[in-house]
Length: 213
Image (tube, rainbow, N blue to C red; front, side, top):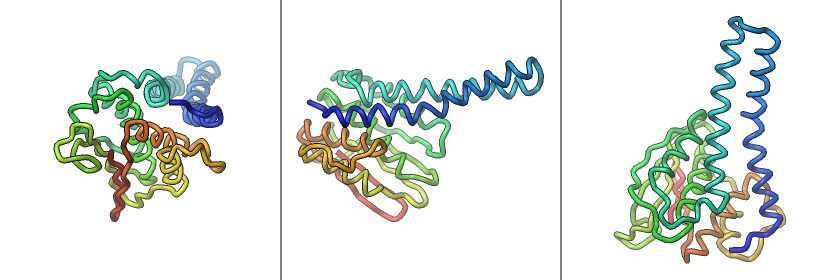
């Protein structure tokens, strides 16, 4: 699967955008310790550093698999996917509920699952519940390759740019001119689904968005 240079640039921009906040918080915490020394402020600062470092590590670990070749293994552990997505969401307003017991057998299943998890979580601007499930939606009944990401919460909405990027990726007609860093993961998800001969199906309900393969 060939990825256009511009799409790679956008994915790197997205990664940097998501990492700059916890990285900056770590620097701020260290500066506070250096300025005030060993006092009550230092305890708060070290708590900030620890929390931000965990967040930074969780995001890096997830992006390494979702954006890169680490997620191409055909025996990628499903429990590792759960750990990565749970860590990514840990400091936010979206809770994870996981009932998927196995990944699709084809290479790249871990990447596609994590990307759909990212996209679904971002459709919950006010927080809510992200459910990762196996099931027949989007595939034949009993098909072990079928899984879905269900986002439930007030104001659940899939942005038009994200949906457009997902469709463009599945069409394999090149990245649209308006593709930006926020929607780049959706374009990559569409490409991965198309490579597997699948489509990402979108279902909208009141307070819920479902992305299924």
